[in-house]
Amino acid sequence: MQYDYDLIAIGAGSGGLSVVERAVEYGKKCAVVEAKKMGGTCVNIGCVPKKVMWFGAHIAESLRDAPDFGFHVERKGFDWSELVKRREQYISNITTWYGGYFKELGIDVLEGWGSFVDEHTVSVDGKLVTAETIVIAPGGTPFIPNETENADLGITSDGFFALTEQPNKVAVIGSGYIAVEIAGVLQALGTQTTLISRKDLVLRGFDDMVRETLTDAMIESGIHKEYHFKVKKLMKADDGTLTIESEDGQHLEGFDEVIWAVGRETLTEPLALDKVGISANGRGFIDVNDYHQTQVPNIYAIGDVTGQAQLTPVAIRAGRYLAERLYNNQPELKMDLSKVPTVVFSHPPVGVIGLAEHDARKQYGHDNVQVYSSVFTPMRYAFTEHQIKTALKLVCVGEEQKVVGIHIVGDGADEMLQGFAVAVQMGATKADLDATIAIHPSSSEELVTMRPMILK
Image 1 (cartoon, rainbow, N blue to C red):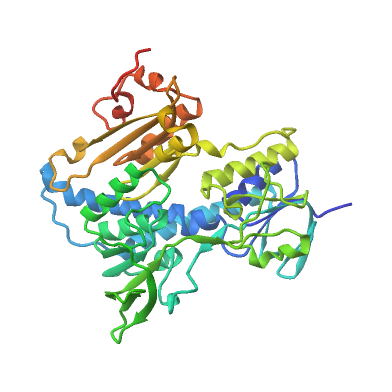
Image 2: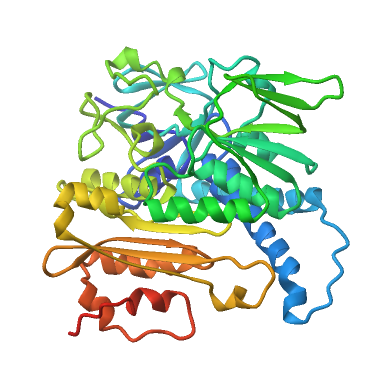
């Protein structure tokens, strides 16, 4: 049968763009379907704008500490709108580049919402197009809990990036990646920030050292932390500010904005998956095999829609591997999600690869795990008023002490992790790290000098 395209990707985010970009290298005719903006969440309302805001907050912290280094700096204020304007111009440049680049590659961009008609046909706002292979990569959207009364008085991370003026007082509800990143940015830039969560510590699922160290650092930065607070409803006062009421009757008042950061859900509802017999679970995730194939042989799903390691580089790798399997005779190529490095752009940042200590002990047995850790004040903060600690941990297993987990909290974690991720990927042992000459003075040297040393 003759199709309009060899491959259509539904969604022009990291996953969708990567699979068509690689497929055209092998002479395939491709298209992407996108209802919003090229680049998806990461470029427009995720990784990229977040990192810009994080840089701004980092500069604010440097200005705060400047007098401790002898600089007589008069801080005359901060213009939120100027930062946002420059951020959006940067993003616009990226999306404009995508348009020209894809035109050059011969990839068609079909603007509109895509939905299935049958296993080879997609309707794009009523226009029918066909493809031999279809890739589902619609990404996700922030989740607002339906059970909370007047929940829509709050905004999500999308709304945070839409703010053109700096709020004076904000509550962030949640304790995951997005919550701690937004709270850290707001506090550093001068907004009075409250972090509301149901548990004592942030970043559920991370190593306990990471959770404890970051929670303490956020509180020391001035963020007000409300523990064991289950939100019942939001209310708007006569002056326009927001009040949050808990299930046990507590009230937190006077917020200019309340930001929901309690998770994300996928954008599968518009896809009409039932037309092709693909099912999704309650949060909209689509089940796939190790090769990202759905129940329908010619339909694949990649990225956040699968619920697997919802990170931009993972979606990009999944898209490229899929194209290699389909068009470059590498049918057995598949991803290993057990060693995915990740960074939380909190204040201070967190870098992690591999297993947390509790997961390693559960998987390998308590006595087969050896842990090395270090907590210290790095030179950057050793003589400043605001002293921020760095904490590092190695998780090793077996007689050879293979490194199965590295956990870093502190300045530079975001940059130092990538190199150590290569070491973990290659199967490094504690002896390999010990045999590496340290770079001094640096925080990363702690990872190759932890006692007891193993001579090699």
